[in-house]
Amino acid sequence: MYNPNSELLTKRARIWLLTGILFIAMNLRPALSGIGPLVDHIRQAFNLSDTLLGLLTTLPLLAFGVISTITPLFTKRFGIGKTILGAMALLVVGILIRSWSNIAGLYLGTTLLGIAISFGNVLIPALTKQNFPHKAGFITSLYSATMSIGASLAAGLSVPLAADLNLGWQGSLASWSLLAFAAFVIWIPQIKRIKRNKPRRSFKTAMKKLSGTQLVWQLALFMGLQSLTFYVLLAWLPDILISRGYDTEFAGWMLSLSQATGIIGALIVPSWAGSRKDQRLVIALLVFLEIIGLVGLMLPQLGLVVVWVSILGLVLGGTFGLALLLLVLRSSDSETAAELSGIVQSIGYFIAAIGPFLVGLIQDSFKIWNYSLGLLVIISLLKLWVGMGAGRAQKL
Image 1 (cartoon, rainbow, N blue to C red):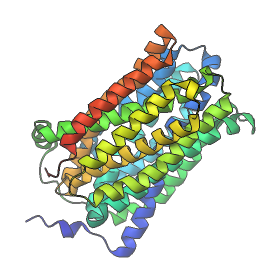
Image 2 (cartoon, helix red, strand yellow; image 1 turned 45 degrees about the vertical axis):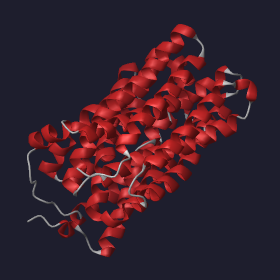
Image 3 (cartoon, rainbow, N blue to C red; image 1 turned 90 degrees about the vertical axis):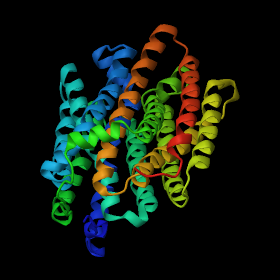
C-alpha cells in the first residue's frame, strides 16, 4: 500500500534540498523579466514591430504550455532530480543563444529557455508535496518569493547592466546565464537526495483522468488568467510608462518595483492561504486590489504610478504563489501533484501566451494603452469567477 511518509527525507537532507529548490526558483524569472526594460533596444537592433516584440514573451509561454503536459513523462523515466538538472543546463544554453545570435537565434534561444523554465515551474510543487507536505504554505511562500526576487533583480538591473556597465542589451541578457550555471552546479548533489518512487499509473491514464475533472479546469483557468496579466505587465509595463513621458530607466525600475512588491505578496499570501481550508476569501480580496491597480494605471492624470505598480506587484506575486499552493493543497500525493501541476500549467500557460501577443496587436492597431488595460480588468473578473471554484476546500 502507498505510504506518503515513505517519501520524506531526513531533516538535514531536506534543508539541503530546500536550498537547491530556492536556487532553481531564483532562475525561473530573470530570463523573462529582463526583456521588458530592454525592449526598445531590441526593437532598434532588429527593427521589430510591437507584435513581434510581444512574441518574445509569448514564445516561452507556448513552451510552458507544451512542455508542462509532458513533464511527467520525463520524471517517470529519469526522475525529478535529473530532469531539473537537464533543465538548468538547457537554460544556460538558451540564454546564451538568445543573447549572442541574429534574429533567428533571438527567437530560438527564447524558445529553449522557455522549455527549460517550464520543467522547473511544474516540478517545484511536486517536490514540495513530496518532501514538505506539512509545511506546504510556508515552503510555497519561500520559493515563490525567491522567484519574485529573481524577477525583480533582472527587471531593475537590465538597463544599468546594458548602459552603465556598457554590456549592451546582449551582455545584459547573457549575464543571467551565470546564475543559471550556479543553480546547475548546486543542484548536482541534490539528485541523490531525491527518492525515486515507482510510478503507480501510466502518463496516459493520469492525463485522461485529470482532464475530465472540473476542479482541474478551474485551477488551470485561474492560473492561466493570473499568468496572462502577469506576463502582459512583464512585457509591456515599461513601454506603457515610456509612452506617457517617463524615461527608460524609471520604467525599468517601476517594473522592478512591481516584482519587488511581488516578493511581499509571495511571502504573505501562500502562508495565509495555506492556514485556511477554503481560499475563496483570499482570492476575492486579491482580485479586488488588482482591479484598483489596473484602473489607477488607466487614469494617468491621477499620477501615483508608484502606488498602482506596487499594488499590482503585490497582488500578482501573491496570486501566483496561491496558484502554486493550490496545486499542492488539491493533490493527495507527490505523483498526483506532478501530474496536476503539469496539466494545469499546460492549459494555463497556453491561455497566458495569448496575452503579450494580443496586447502587441491591440497596440499596433489603436496606439492607446487603455484598451489593453481595460481587457485586463475583464480578465480579473473572469479570474474571480473561476477562483470561487478553485478556492473551495476539496482534493483530487
